[in-house]
Length: 235
Ligand SMILES: [Zn+2]
Image (tube, rainbow, N blue to C red; front, side, top):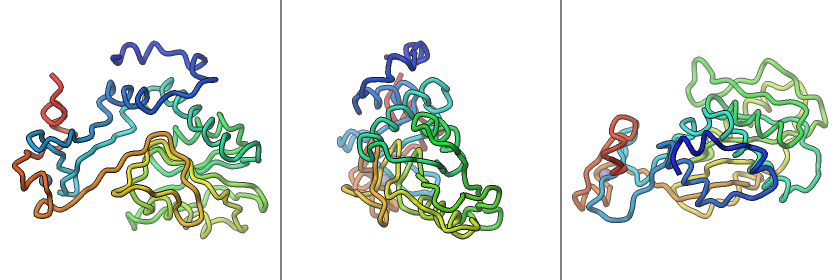
């Protein structure tokens, strides 16, 4: 499976079947969007932007920038959400910026939601979000969608911003739909009172170099964004 194969996909061919996790990961691999350490300490590991070491790296945008792949994956997530929540109404879908925006819109369409909108990054506080353009009417059901979740930080910032900025109380559905869920330790089934519904789930840790098992055993660190070939061993 290479990128040309993926770009030849027809979304209609995937509409009525579940794609396996292995198959989806092969798409991420073909897009250089995912890498997880082999477990062999002779293989290199990742140096994150934060300076921490990690055994995995995901960049969903490298997949989701392809319109058809975003549509197919959004439809897959919508199928999984429907199999959990049944036919209950999803009136609004809300996502976080930036990579989650187009994906959230695709999920909203696949679920038949009336409205899609996203929170905005707070200009003065990197940990906070803003919700001030639209008003969710009272009683409308709201589902949050994320393309990548590592910790509850972004999830909670989105919910807090909407709760604070909306003129009415917000009726959150007790679920969160996530394309790639990679917490530092599994299992994580819920964030607060919202149940996780995810397509791809894997444990990815990140630690300071002085606490890193791989550094200690001689594994070399590479920055994924600039040293992808060295990190993944791809020719
Ligand atoms: Zn390390």
